[in-house]
Length: 104
Image (cartoon, rainbow, N blue to C red; front, side, top):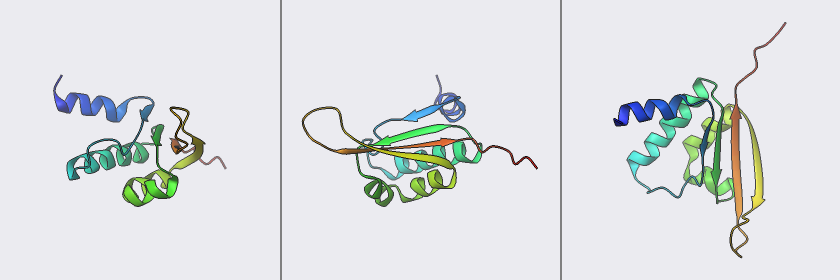
């Protein structure tokens, strides 16, 4: 499958879950693609879940543009301890949902 075909499939899937965000290689290309993906989904009101092992403040510092886009959509934040291993680490989950139309 060509990159462009796979990219379009990921951008437009009914529900996208991005697990362990921040664990990917830290390159300008990777950050830009992640932003483009989140931005597209927020602009098109597509539901998206994003999880990260860092606290919400750490995620916002590292992924500021992405965090701002997620906050611009209808969203919910969940903070919970990591269930894997003995280390107690916080995990955040940001979930966006389509905006409901105004009915007057």
